[in-house]
Length: 407
Ligand SMILES: Cc1cc2nc3c(=O)[nH]c(=O)nc-3n(C[C@H](O)[C@H](O)[C@H](O)COP(=O)(O)OP(=O)(O)OC[C@H]3O[C@@H](n4cnc5c(N)ncnc54)[C@H](O)[C@@H]3O)c2cc1C
Image (cartoon, rainbow, N blue to C red):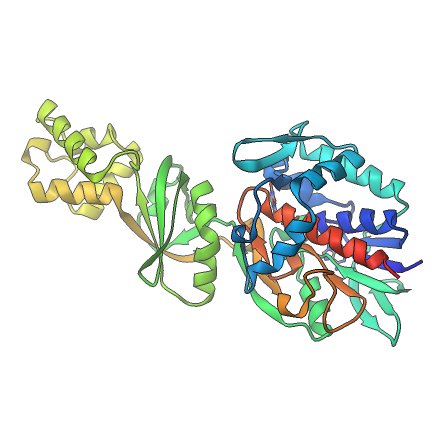
């Protein structure tokens, strides 16, 4: 029977532990938090967007995002449903493939995993921080503060640096590097963005539906629609999280990052022009401020006018055609420079990590060190918002668990 150590009691580690133990391995799970699965509990606003039924390699970023293809094929959605049944968990599929526990509570995911992991005979060591992993000729030694233990195989499932308050650490990168693995520089992902502007903080609290276009070095790279929310530090909202992955990576590469906000994406430029002129004709003596407040959030009006260099107290009948078109242009394309992210503490995930080139995607075993495995976010793979990150954590954890149980 293989003795295996799993470092990290998050999604990938829990999946690996159940699978390996069910296949006959003697599994010990190390978790430095007081309990396992803290990120699962916090996920999806407490609901846990557990998987996405439509995942493909296109939903992932990394130096080689095709690395995920085999894992996704090994755990198709129907198999995941079967696995969930086997741990007593029922799922609810939403529109666009997002999937949640039927209870709509992340707790139930953790309860099912916790009960099943114990049932499978896994030894769970909480409040045990692994400090280092070393290797003798045939064995690995896992070192914690107060002891060291020997294993045949080790899985590094320590996650990423995102949300350190939930237990994340860069330990996995350190362990991997100590065995000669390359670490691709990490960056906060699915995260709020900082803006280099003098007005965003004055609009803090404004939440609206918008279309956001991301420019890197002046080239358009992404366009999404969704909520945005101005904040004292910059901007957040689901649309911003979605563009943050490419924005953050570009910032890491010292590229120029801009975003453009269309405050009224439901209208074409022509329709908006018509609408604006209809309003001017209807209420020619009203101020620009009053008229704009009927079109866009009131708190943005003063700053739209400031950006367009037009007095908001001006009577709309007196607007020149040039001023009108400048305003309409700004409502549709309000540009801000992005100069930072809100950091790992606020990020849902991290890009970068252990280079996949040195990991076998069919076994999750290191190509450099026999018996050493990786799963989940510690690898240089990060998914889009929508259940894709758990998807890869479950799939890679399942493969690693299965392989580690083999003689
Ligand atoms: C707020 C939030 C919401 C999210 N919502 C979703 C969502 O709805 N859907 C989705 O797909 N993804 C979501 N994610 C992302 C998802 O949680 C992660 O991608 C996923 O948990 C990664 O799994 P993992 O096993 O690789 O790492 P983790 O789940 O982070 O697990 C790693 C574990 O290792 C432990 N550890 C680290 N270092 C050590 C050490 N030295 N010794 C012992 N233990 C150690 C950590 O405490 C942790 O428990 C969310 C993330 C956050 C922060």
